[in-house]
Length: 249
Length: 335
Image (cartoon, rainbow over all chains, first blue to last red; front, side, top):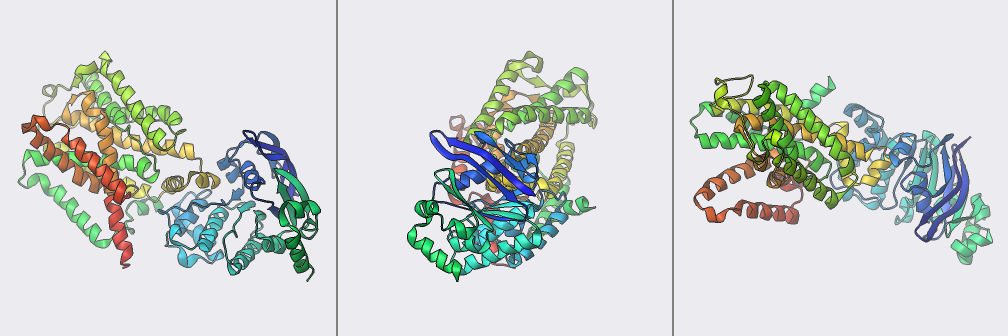
């Protein structure tokens, strides 16, 4: 069953066509990667799906329901959660309080939210950080908190915007494992925007490539990195060969 | 009974602080039977009133980060409703209180809807404008006495009149506002751990992230604004019976809005104790400056200079106010 359908989505900022006629489907339980050069419209696409930006034309259907034009908080309540590329952590909220805000989307009382937050914190192996302010933590832990908070709302579909950016290879591996774990154990469908190709190759079932706001390729990761259009727009010859070698090992 | 438990849950506060607060509460309770001047009595009544104003402001301004500089309009609505109803229809205070609060809350919804479409400085400026427009309307509206204001004829009632809240002795006013204060205090202690407070703090830290977590930011702010309004207008109703002479300048002026916000900012935004600490510093200061200036007419406006200096000091050194400093010290040496 398709959990998300995007049809002919268009978004312009003034004269800039950020998303042009983008269509794709996401199957339930799938892990979909979105790649493309900087400025290709990946984050805009997330913002359009999640209701941050109103779209100019096209439609977004989530779990069989048309959500085009919905406000972002209503979309979140339907079970679509996301993280932000630049996560502006607050100095005032501790890690646990942050996750509790996510739990409070459904929970009415504090004890329910606190219990839910404890569970999510354990799941993300950050229970020992629960009393720290988010702004005090290293970037990898902040990303975990952001993901934990998004997941605390109990979503069906999770949009992750460059959760591995700026992390060292060890941390990338850890967070990759975490995302796999989420998808497998919590029955959450995941779409991720990522520049770290190892992560895309290792986790995604399918990849969409954007360039200048247009979808230029779609398919399983191995065939996408062989696509001449993708190599030209994004990967470059050298990297494509390298990833192909890795993939064939 | 989770609500009851949360109302009396002070687990986040230091033990010596709670002890000091308990002792202060005891002193306040016994104060009227101790030897005191009428000046200190009225100062403490003012302290309770401004603590409550600042507690109300702190919900939307501190937890929610929406710097509102128009709270005086709600004070005015409460005060004028009580004055008009008492003078014209001889209505008991305990009827004026819910009516005044309801009118103020309705008005807060009316202006809250457009106001909370704005953010940051634009919100602050517009809140000032809304308050001043209402003040101008009251200044020229003959039903509420226009610029002459209203006066509750105290001689009509034989003191102590608990129904209309007319007393000749300040002691009665003292205990009534003290009861209001305790009620407000425990309400905020519940509020700060409520779902609403968490959502407000999330909005304060990053509104876009808050929305993505299913929080309807606009509606959350409007709801909180109603709570702030209820606090301020309730004390406004009390103000009418206590001062008896109601003028727009004393109830709806910009300096009052600023003083309310400043009280919470100085003490510490988004904390339980901040508004009380702020009022404990600013109100005696205000009273003494006023006494002192009474003899020196040339120095009128000095209090505004001092407030301005305090605002600059807070924003430059510790945006979270005095309670922010306390928290910092506590975090540095973990218990």
